[in-house]
Amino acid sequence: MFAVFSILALAFSTFAGTPVPRCVESIAQISASAKNFNLSFPAEGTSWGSGSEGVQESFNSASGLLALGEPTVPVSGTYGIHMRFCEPSSAVERRKDTPQILVHGVSYDDEYWDIGFKPDTYSYVRFAAAQGYATLNIARLGNGKSDRPDPLKIVQSPFEVAVLRSIIATARTGRIPGADQEFGTIVYVGHSFGSMILNGIVASEPTLVDAAIFTGYAHNSIDTSPVSVQPASENDPARFGDLPPEYLTTTNTSTRATDLYGSPGTFDPAALAWDEAHKDTATLGELLTVGFTITAAPKFEGDVLTIIGDQDFPFCPEAGCANVHKEGKFYPKARSVEAAVIPSTGHSLNYHLSAPQFYRTIQAWLTRHDF
Ligand SMILES: *[C@@H]1O[C@H](CO)[C@@H](O)[C@H](O)[C@H]1NC(C)=O
Ligand SMILES: *[C@@H]1O[C@H](CO)[C@@H](O)[C@H](O)[C@H]1NC(C)=O
Image 1 (cartoon, protein in one colour):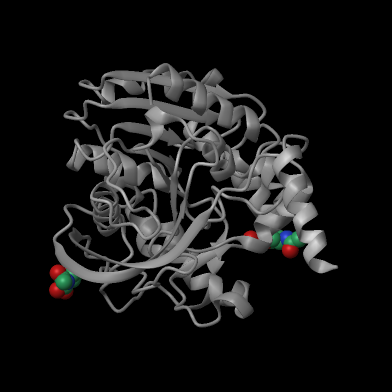
Image 2 (cartoon, rainbow, N blue to C red; image 1 turned 90 degrees about the vertical axis):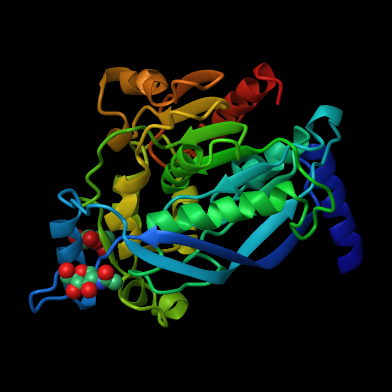
């Protein structure tokens, strides 16, 4: 009975919706080294604070004004990174060696680009697979099933750039579990902090990525302090109880909606509820070092696309998001630089009713630039 049902379900999903791609999950051991910032500074008898208030307080007083100086502290290590490699569900010859590397933002994990809620609408992985792309969807260090090392010393922006560089180099040489081929062309799609890391990559190793797609990000100086966070271990002991207090998450459904979504009506409340139930963490080390990669990439010669929701206020300070059309100055050697604004959409684009339009906008750009 059950077998018959699942065969029917499979047939249904094949004919009525976007096909489900074949995927391989793995925990890959990734080695990286970088220089991180010295965050041991509230030195004079203070610490980063403990408990909910202490962490939010030190976060508020530190972010925004953080003049960290140069990263000087060498860090290196090998960490388990959760990866999901999905094959294309439709064969397109010229995309055979062009995977898309998908990298989520803070308080998310690999769920962000492959949302389990109404995936025909909200899973970018399924969408991309149907256009002929393989995807490598990762949970960044400190999130999901990836390792969660020291949230102040290790999980900072510089080291995360190094980890991603190592993952992309691994993908290029065909050593990603599930992908038994080399990849010549790399499309990187980032969201928010995942886009900032992309900025750090194209600035520091400009030949690693061919198409740089920045979503939920532009070169603004951002003040993250109004964002409501608390230690993840207090917020959801069942999921995060073992984590040190510098692993943070958003406080509740209503602050998450305020901080990451557009106005009511731009999203399905059931999508928000799913997001709240599947949310992940951010480290204090990341939040204090977000500014590190908001920089120019003077040697990057690939193609650049910036996509933003028109209600993404931190990254849309100018009327009509006019600022995103001036991103070209940060990529002076790029083959092309374009921007698109998605209407009725907040920061976390994938969770909005406009998600299909967002995906089609990315695809139209990829097609136009021969990816
Ligand atoms: C970080 O800065 C503090 C205070 O200036 C200093 O005592 C400490 O040695 C530094 N740590 C490293 C690893 O550089
Ligand atoms: C959500 O958290 C904020 C503080 O971050 C608090 O002021 C508010 O009362 C909370 N709302 C609910 C519904 O729990």
